[in-house]
Image (cartoon, rainbow, N blue to C red; front, side):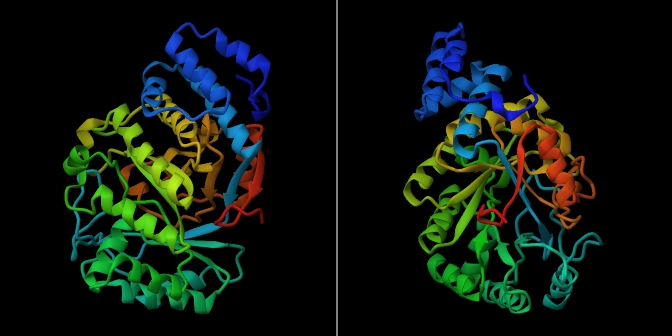
Length: 379
């Protein structure tokens, strides 16, 4: 495979190469992708089951090139994790601690504002706020926090609170989803991250995270946010009890919602990590499976503009490899401000990269690095 993104273009030559795929059904699906047509869920499952890695790399890079050219994006961001105390106890989670545990934390507004002030004078454009679902903090508590951040640094994009957090904090205040989101937007919330989606299949979800917001609720919260002009991301936790059809079902629900609202900026596959949780006996899927998953996601999710390789989860090398398999975004600089994946055993125990380091990682793969804001506008 060439070490740059310029090889993967739609052309008669590429069509002839795809014509040589022996598997008839796979060849027909590949030619459909090459011609820019949407594939069906059954064809998505076929790609997982019978598409070898070179074919998936070729097809996903065609789609990537069609949507995002030779660009690969990143931003300058930092995370705030207000608490790891959580009312839920998901089997895959390595992050949650009960109140009173020596490894638990619950930062006050003043402590959080000190974290924001630590970036005063630094060239950052986004703060990403997410953490545990605290039993006592309602939407008014978080509206106050967002308003304080915006008052201190108005230009900072606040991307905050997964749908699972939003579900609890809004219900705790006795409000409808729409009313709660409106209050947050009025307080300065700019967008919401994609966490808490896990896997949408209800049977698998019941086995790994029975207590938290349902698949239907997650989708409803994002749909409501999109209707209010709040864009969001979407995630999928993979590599545990789910099968390939479960992944396609998950992505198909996202694709249908995106057809309806157009509000998703990016899709982020999140790999299950085995350390320090109650599902450790499952182990972890291979890097080959990681790349296969990026590729199928890029091909199937034809209406979500960006596929993000979250490097604190994948590690830097796999993130770079993912650019050859459909990913076009490496997230941001992070500056060692997140512990969610490090607590689960990810390679990046102190995740931090400079903008220059991310640019070099992208350029080293033959792509053009583009610094972006949170809405993928060039900075």
